[in-house]
Amino acid sequence: MLNEPNVSIQVQSVYLESQSQPDIARYVFAYTICIRNLGREPIQLMSRYWLITNSDGHKTEVQGEGVVGEQPVIPPGKEYRYTSGAILETPMGTMEGYYVMLSTQGDHFHVDIPAFRLAIPTLIN
Image 1: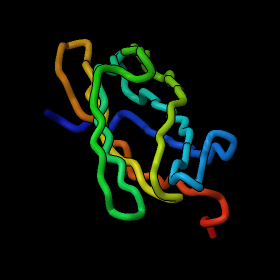
Image 2: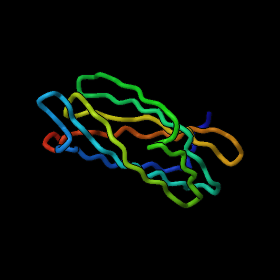
Image 3: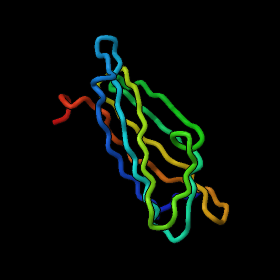
Image 4: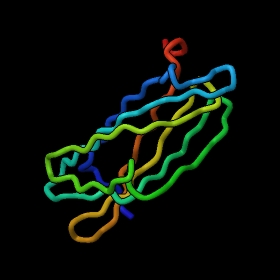
């Protein structure tokens, strides 16, 4: 499976203090991902894979079809944006992974999602 250089991924994460319960080691984060199709053909997001690592080194793998219940088609020059969430047992961690996309020719390819940090604001310098 090929990696596709014509797709840009940008991520923003935020700590959801109102939904978190630090006294029972429950830290809730939201992240918004923007996927830009920089190529000349439409692409479809088919599935995702996440590796979530908390600050204790505990790793969780998550995979499944689409994102937030959708398998969006992204036209050339356009973007798809969605927000989802993660719950950690520690106040800091990371997420990374990849999307499996489908080209108009029927080829599947990977788009890497660079590692990003999930952290409560008091831990960020």
